Length: 343
Image 1 (cartoon, rainbow, N blue to C red):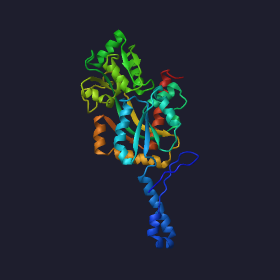
Image 2: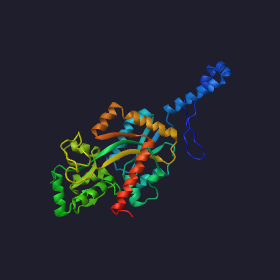
Image 3: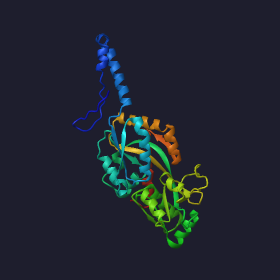
Image 4: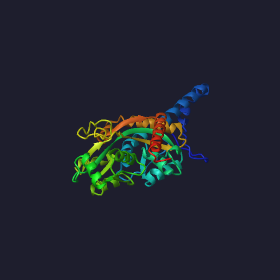
């Protein structure tokens, strides 16, 4: 069996393996073979550490509103990963500040494996645009899980059947385009698209994808940009129409939908979806997540779920994800400086 201990200096998970039963059963051999027993005990500890997680309940944070991309991502991940890791996951929404409040909540949490944050490019953009008290550099990358496809959509009973019509409307009557949080990748994609198309469209941001979808459906916005997974139910219901995708090629699931690039605007956007933790995550915690995520991505039921949501599996263990995040941040900062958004 294993138990969790807490040190007074801070919460640190420790696995303590009880070997009393083994000692009673093998008392004679133990007296004669102390060295062998020590080796066996170490091996038992290794097995226990690989099999058990030091928390029954783990909190997963998101800045996304209910029904938004990160909210859906976490809920579906938790539904399949919980049984594999022996953990009950709690999804906690921490809206506000384009992810700044969620990042602060995580940065000040114990690095004991009890709380993580759904990371997307938003938390890097927000760190650079808003200069909050805590930034992406105050967190530890854990694992990346997916790449997510960004799409442009409108309401199906609205006036737009093609993206060209949206651009024409924006030239004649400005237009209103919607994105999620101010520091989101979607916001940056629309800013780049507005410049490339040379139109004065107003870009309206929201607390999350769920709020954005509502404003597209009620006609407040001409278009919205978001992940295919968060609008899937509205697409299936016939309430939304896809106009374009930001991928480098047409999606196999949506072969009739053109890319923004082939429409004449050289913009390709890919959104990563991973998990971040507080600084100083113990190696045992990291290893448990790497193993758990790698295994759950192979689960047939989960594979069917994320395929339907048009999520592309892109697993990266901690070392690779840390390098990826640092590279993305460097490229993002260079882009924002080159365009005069930050000094």
